[in-house]
Length: 317
Image (cartoon, rainbow, N blue to C red):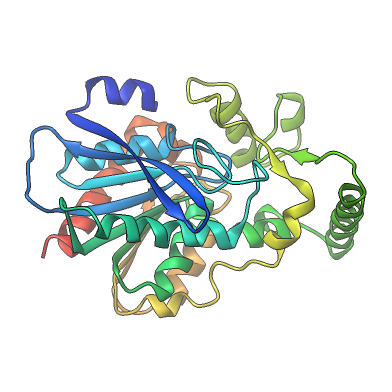
């Protein structure tokens, strides 16, 4: 297994803690560079973590391994989460998450060790949808890749594998509306989890949710700043969000989509590939689930090899 705290112990990389702004919010990130490959100006890859995660989990693993290949990588905590600022805490805000990527590009253009014309992005899980959305209009992003990509708005609007009924959707919206009223009148914020918090909560859930519990709550990947909290009353802004309505705007820049053949979320990869124009590739990792691409060594290394080839081709020209 590949867990961040183990990977960085033996990796040939140096890590620099950095901060950069997203309007009034200060974002926290880590810059990774190889100790064996030195360049005056590096091609750079920005890496966004899954919703509910932090940079010291799978985003940090991918950032470390890509840095060893010769890229400067930046893994950062999203607004309102991890070491990044923003109030209220644990707000999942699609517009802020998209702007986080654009602001990360802003930051990299100010660094003397980055070639501003060779910046790519990698989004994992919900960050895959967010990074696609950012890249649609930010042409400074020259190459776009996703791993286990998901459209978080679609997930909340329709359920995983789109199993939510119209009645269930309307009941959810009613609960959100009622909770907003309660909080506006002084009641405390109510939180829900991204993944189950116990084995009991995994009963009847799809495999991706069960494995989400194991990874985030019951494995060495568990992290003090990844607290499995989301503000329930603000889910309305997530339900309104759609990541994949203008994928064609990425053209003519290249897009790489990596997904596990056994992932419950794999339909997002298929639909994104279908909507994209121009240079595009859908790479299935045979046998992998959504979460296994976060940390199972065999699958992660397959994904890293594909990502290295992709970014090498389109950022090292």
